Image 1 (tube, rainbow, N blue to C red):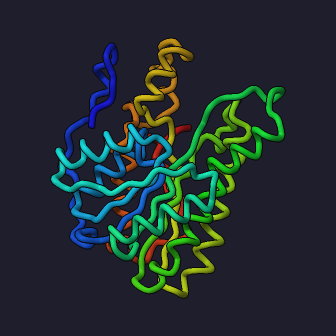
Image 2 (image 1 turned 120 degrees about the horizontal axis):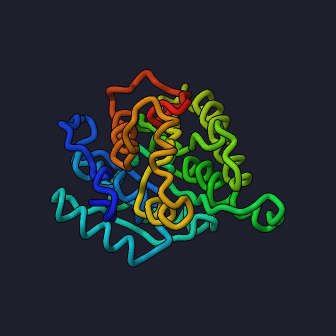
Image 3 (image 1 turned 90 degrees about the vertical axis):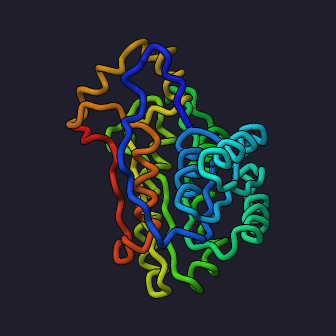
Length: 270
């Protein structure tokens, strides 16, 4: 998959000799929000490892496109179901149906989220509750839904956080509140399910230039790509595969004794 980066050739992914994880082959993996952004790269990355991938998304057309592209690029077509993750009953039903195709879940990646901006004066109670549902609540209930499989087989939960709350990013008060809570969710859940052989970690990405972010940056930030880069120790743009490679490691047996941790993938923002 490629980003739409016309006008920004420096955003093209850097070819690397990425790792392969034999333990992921044939393993059931579920991903939320797999139809766009970081999620579609997660789906492709796990498919390339030979995992039996299922994903949930709200956009049927986008989900169909991702499944088709992954089948072409990896030879491994992921299963998918359409659900609004704010509807916990629909989420549970989608997970139940997907596990019939993927087999027992050995890894769950709670990726879905939305970081639309809203000035603090315009935040309503309804918007606040919606942002908690979109960015936080479903991560717990998806984890709860697959815990039986994970406890029987051993496996991993990977929650997607963000470094935005660490920076106190403006215009994102509900989003950053939800994303900061993911670190607490991760640590408490890891402690509770560790005795059952289940690992729980989270990833806190920086400004990952997905297609949506590139489009928004052009419209809102008006060429502030280089300005943001100055905050990073590593002066390269962060792309979705950078996050996907961390998720692969955390799902594989290579990280078997790592749990309760948050891994920041932001190029070293200071």
